[in-house]
Image (cartoon, rainbow, N blue to C red; front, side):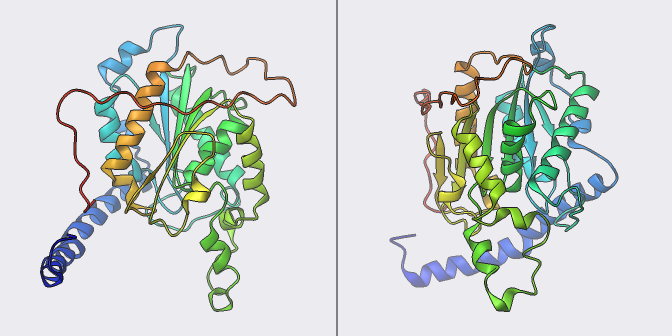
Length: 325
């Protein structure tokens, strides 16, 4: 709209905003609430999405399947991945997907003693993944790719670095969406303001998300010497988790312009980066070693993976990025 007169921007913007707020958002929230009610009844996406023929054919006896685990963020549930599941199922029908739901309902605050820390959430998620894989006959995957948004990205990282061997999950890759791996500066600022002291900013998991968090510092040290490949992405307009906290130095990353903390999950540009990264990793990465293989010698850092080069553009018309997106 750079060349559009201001009066025309207002004339177009006001009806469009009203339509979005009154129609699109209520419909989306109704859909999400329906998924939440299913979750309260004990339903699960994966129980309604049977494995494709390609995924079953790819599970060669003795080799093990490749599993992608999707971990939602704080105060949400697995319906957060509904859009991404459609894209990933279409692009990678030979993969197995697992979603977890470690909070109940939609936007519900229900932290317990188990979910009050990063480690507690991570153990719940790792246990659910292990149980789901066993129930679906995938108890010995050859490779696990963790993918998490916000808190889910931190949980995915913690599982990869601290719990993978304990729960028999051979994690080779972690994709983190807007994860506060160095803490949230906004949360740290809010906790210092007297007029915000009535808000629950120092309860449960929020304690681990401040920039001075010892848990996050421990994760940073683990990432620096890890042989897990990380891909991190975040929105340039995210007020909760800024790029300097979400992106991991020395690993592939992407900043998606004009999106924030939550709407990045339905950004086609963000998913284009993730799908291209997955495609590149699945095509080029060698088969992982078994989970029980001897760890590197103490004090010897594993070589950090170099930056991944995206595959060359495919023939045919390429989508154009609109300045409105």
